Image (cartoon, rainbow, N blue to C red):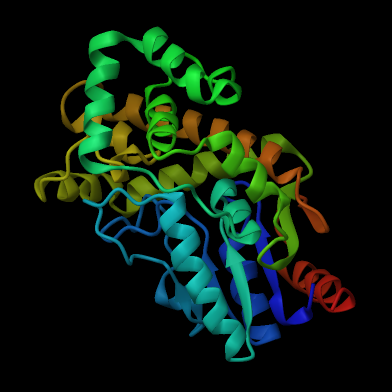
Length: 312
């Protein structure tokens, strides 16, 4: 693929310094940051999503941060459209897109240029959801098997969302299996180079995550969640599913104590980091930087720029 489509991705589990290195690389390479964080996209959610401050961005443009109302149900398909448009504009201006974040599905889908199958939505989706509730997962899965047996064989009867989605596609005369096959065969949209951050000692990463949660609480996470609830944002909304928000919301509703909620946030954050580490193992070509106790960003920047330039 032409170097004109080359992008740099800075990823890794939470609390590894992705924001800091992304800014350093943007300054060094003449780039702009494109966020790949499924929750930083929302407005009014700053502390719990660790959005970069004006001081941290150091004048580097940051795209797709705080651009969507928390009342919207943002999706990976919308991200691919939005981020693709931003990356193309950055490239047209002769600059380098630095994609920074830990939402693996967003990153993978953007780089691949994944074309998401259209769905009926609206009335059709409501009809299928009502049918699922009335008939049950087994019956709806059997119905899906008549038109897309390959997809049906991969789904569990309790997976309402994916069953309904697959039936939407089937009603449109296609199948998700066929669409996914065509998508996998297509060349990637961008030529990506990956910088994957981490720590040599997993226990050190977990300690950093715990400290980060404590700092969020000190900076006003509880007040931030209370403000969202007072705005009318329901606990079932997509935005409120973010780690740190749903747990604090439960505490504010009296379902648990604040101390218990904070400990749950730490636990779920550590589990999420573990999943992120597994996801990042698939990236190639990748430079994997494993910090010791204290991240060395000078060395990380040096190694990262060398890695990016030697592959240009």
